[in-house]
Length: 466
Image (cartoon, rainbow, N blue to C red; front, side):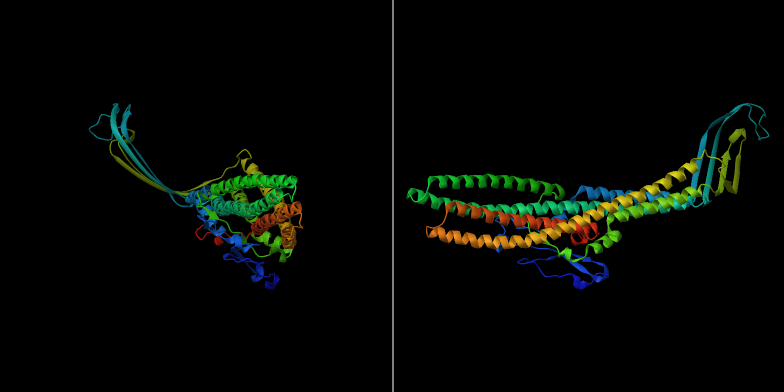
């Protein structure tokens, strides 16, 4: 059991948020996923650009989960699996069949029962026959019932497969949305950075005109501005690509400003607890267990083929002028039919060996999946730990760079500052601030990746009807 006190639900500095999901951990531990601004450094960056609307991750996820064709395909496969179960179940019900035959019948010689008929004379007569039969399976070694159970289990597997598809769509949507978030904020930082560089260059030009500064420094400043503008254009192109990737998942979206969701600090939970949760809740593990159960039912069905099959057959028939006999003939039978296949060319033995081998294979697949999932949990956990440490260090770096740049500006205003140091200081501050958005994005992506592996990427937090 994980104590509830193990998690500190305090917000990170400067981060308003809204709840988007409720995750219940073992022993009553609750984690709240929230969709609001995350790790904001400068509150002025929260302003929504003109013509843009705020569109949270929760809203974007609604588009992705409701419009993505992959999820609809998975839903149709669920439906197909349900019908497959009904097909297997049908054999347990009585099988009714009616056969009707009608036509001209030629008999040579004909055997007429009519006293006026000439016996032995060939003739062509209209004939008709109606047969109504009912067949009820009574026992077949439980082969049919095990087949029904197998298909019911496979139906559960298809539902889990749908969850797996949904998880993949959710993770991809989160990554695409966070890429848009990072690039939008990077462009906003670029706007401010370019504005500051242009102001510095304007002052340098005035100083050069007054003979107080070297033209070489002006040329250097212009080259740094040109480089920043080129990188700005590349970043804008990357944002266009990121929006295209996101709309591939969601369909067409309005112009919007992304806001980073915040997740609870997951590294406060011990790594071993995540492994236990994955064992119980990971979708891949659940699918593996469901598929194995289906194979166990199939094996029981194969064993049932070694036993006899018992059917109850009821048949009623009525014929007219059939076989050369003029008149109506009725008959009815009811019987139990037992059949047993003595030798089938070792088909049953081969089927049993095949399913036994499949059971061994699925156990090996479980071991492979366990290694892969545990590795992903460790990677995500360690990444979050390292990124959070880097996040705190970067906040201190931004604060130091901001104060240092303020000192440079003060010295520059007094005519004591160095132009190159001032430009490089602006570049360091810009790089620090944009790195912060990159770290925020990586923390959130790794947090959701970790939640996915432990089975708590809760789609109900994003889509109530999915």
